[in-house]
Length: 310
Image (cartoon, one colour):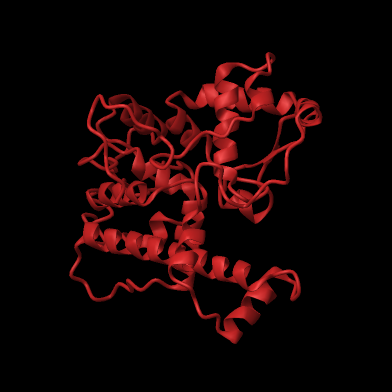
């Protein structure tokens, strides 16, 4: 474990925290506001080694300590200046309420800066230190199984471009994500504290894919643990309803970013207030699925719509 400095002592943040990666030409671009540059740096952080990322606007707003309205305006300015491209979900992704994807675009200001100060080709190692998969691969050399190598080559679509070292790093990265996903599952099981044996608490491929997708969206293990704790304190999900059925399986919570955001931002210890009303004559009087019965105005509007009937 890295030694923690005492309060008030000087320290170097490298090795302790992640950083916003704002290129020098973007940081000095006068047509952007300060929040625009921070949003650009946050997108670059979520990007990692990929070509696109998909953090939600509420997630970006929480990371930067501003409102979602300001983040939305910053993203629009970045898109107008030609620094990013926003890709809206289509088809089945739109029905699943998935977030938009963002791509960082090569810009003339980047071209000018590169022409003035030529740089070497970018490395896959982050600038702030050695990545954890690479460090694990060096500390614990893995004997590559031929079948595992074949599977890695099939995933990459080539057989000649992957060196044994690259395959070793990919295997270490996969094992690290699997350990993190298992930690999330154990935290979820501990938060629910249910004694029912009907739940399948195994880390299935589907569940691991969902949890890893939340990692790619920028959620940490602690974020998912907090969301699970808030979900466990909601009466309706714990079976306090007419059907007395619990809705606490991890696939329901980690299926998309919206559900994680909903429970991550819920007030701790209270969950989300839900009061369910029997749907009488729903064809002529469509009722909301969820309504807060403490809201007098909402109840009055509902009674007026139903003609005074309860």
